[in-house]
Length: 255
Image (cartoon, rainbow, N blue to C red; front, side):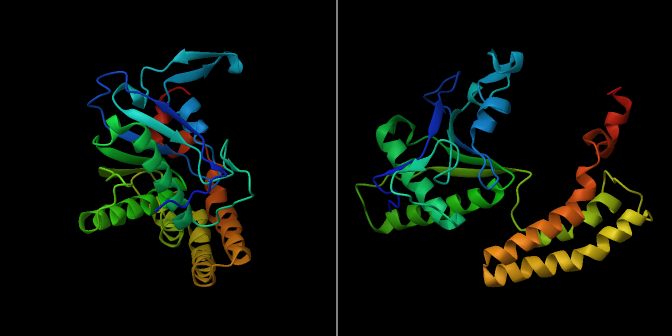
């Protein structure tokens, strides 16, 4: 399986593990969006360096994931970040994007076979909660096919885990659970009898109805309407709260 065209270029930055790279796991990092470059994770989250001095310098990041893992930061799908296609190729669904990532991984492991047997982990955040399971599913299916159908052009990818941070996996369920969490959860933003709780709950049915219609029609127009409504009516009021307000322990941190 190789869905990448000859004129498609997926941009990646690879950092070898600082400790024992020959035995360290291989990690693919993906930011979400959809449309976010993994440069965000590289430069501001888990990469080997932190941006300093208002972008004029970098500093060593002692907490970088490549301390103990070989890490790939990949811009995908095509046209995200520094990835592009000369022939105008575009990708509009996560399953198709997953096929491109699988093709990229095969090429990477052929070029660097010393990482082929390392445990492989897919780590992603936000909309990566949709990307990563699709990629993992394709890897799983291809590995299964390789058991019965030998293909010398393909390498079995040693998939070990999928790690999601704040992953968007099913908006219908996740958007519907927001009032329960922020009003009755372990870190309530509002007391259960707060007017905002009642307001949020009245908007869940409309949000879920729009999302379900999006799922059934796969229409960009309908899905955009669902996104706008759910984000503004359910997530919007919460986004106006500070992190310190939501995480009660911060109240005592003098921030």
